[in-house]
Length: 475
Image (cartoon, rainbow, N blue to C red; front, side, top):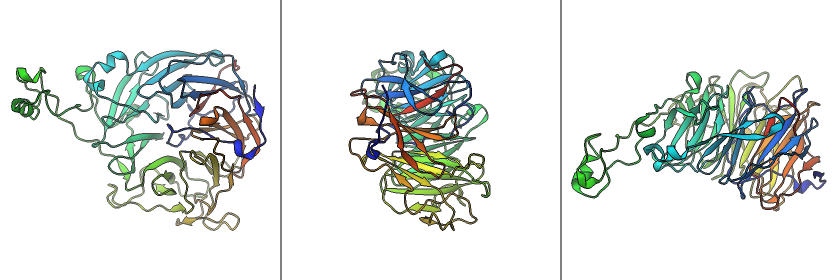
């Protein structure tokens, strides 16, 4: 039973595991209303290890679905929908699951990656994925998966098969801390919190390929898991430096590991960020010069910053190697820590303002920022230095907020356009054990009087949501 709630304070998203910005929609990931088609919202239940589902009405409100929950998952924390191929991908703690979305919204599992066979190979024997995020290429043909240890990003293809194929990879430096991903156009962005807080940009090749080569030796590997043969003798140590030569018998292994390959160098990077969390990308609004803009929330110094990207998606940095950090063109001076960001792009036809919405997990609230021009007297900017008058500057204060409510712990959210052209925000609320929905006005305000929420599922701790467009009605 769904019930609207009037209190401003009880709105919000939800949960720890999601710390990247919700990716910009493409034709194969858009959750907007389509006439004659139903929609269904999938939500993680992180604590019991489930995925629950709710029907989305044409006006944006939610009602229960008739489908049984998917159970037996290990702390699910990220959902992403491929609308073209009718699939749902679920990130667990150390694995990814692919599901087919059947008529009416029922889910049927296609594959589990890595499989038990994968884990018995050198590639995954010592892998700790600790997933925070997933990303789909713009054509939904490649799924990008970051693995915390040993610090790589995998590109999976053949996503309708069992199991999917690893087509390519990125190999980071020691402990790169890859967590959060956005695939936008021909570039994959990744935030890292390892040796240097940063956002790296990797060009994508044909078919969504990453630059790193994937070897099928011993089940596949992007780098060795060790630099020495097992054992402590001097011969064992020496063997580890000479490549694939036979190991002495006392080392207990047939050959030495393959020497570590070169690190995959990003095509562009922004370094020296202070523990970057959520980030989001917007194309140029009408009147801008064709550039793109990246906004990032820093946890360490509690700032929200904006950087200009070139039209090709790389950072607008003269040196290109990140050794001299590009300065942000806009900065919010109010201290904030956002665990997720969603963006609404400008739309002249719908007459909507480009807007960022951020979730504050610790304070239990949502904030919205209607982006503005440097000389707008009605919406003064914060610190903003940019030529021309595009609506890309952060305002000097939030446009709307739901207010602090410590009963909530908002994490991830998704923004969808409904039948009447209104944008509705869907929020996972963590410790509140509900999914909430509310309208985002054309001017960028969170309309809390429209708030709708599902019934409590006690102890579920939802931390992500994903809306799928069906070919038929939601059941």
